[in-house]
Image 1 (tube, rainbow, N blue to C red):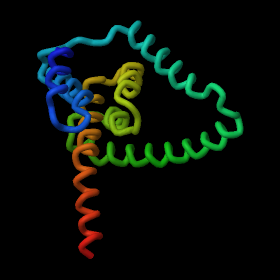
Image 2 (image 1 turned 90 degrees about the vertical axis):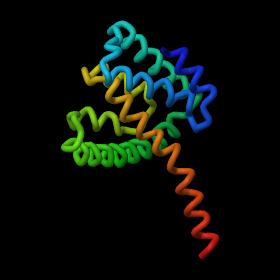
Image 3 (image 1 turned 90 degrees about the horizontal axis):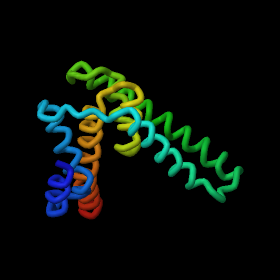
Image 4 (image 1 turned 180 degrees about the vertical axis):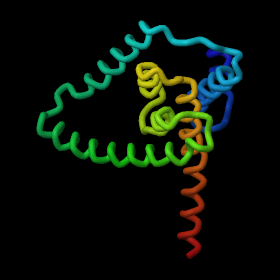
Length: 158
């Protein structure tokens, strides 16, 4: 399935197809019950180690003063984005067949692999988290350029 999705994505003309097509196809197959594969815990642990090492390696040679300066700003932005994610999860939960914590995780900023690992660690369905995350990313990637063009055109006309 992954190879077929990749082949389709390679030919697709929409943005981020190499990420979105495989994730969407996986979400559809899991949601329909055609696939019921779960990630073994050993792979989840390995993924956490690899992601953590990758993030940590980016700080090599970074001065502590700069880490502290950037760290508090990142924490402030992270809290603001998490609050927005929580608000969206609380508003959507009554209309979706998902619990608020799962939706909260789905709407948090971050990469799909990282959110998937957190979902596995918290015993939240990673396919549901990935589906909501992919939908959010798709809407941003698809709608943001159109909105920017519309705003740009409005400013040029006015």
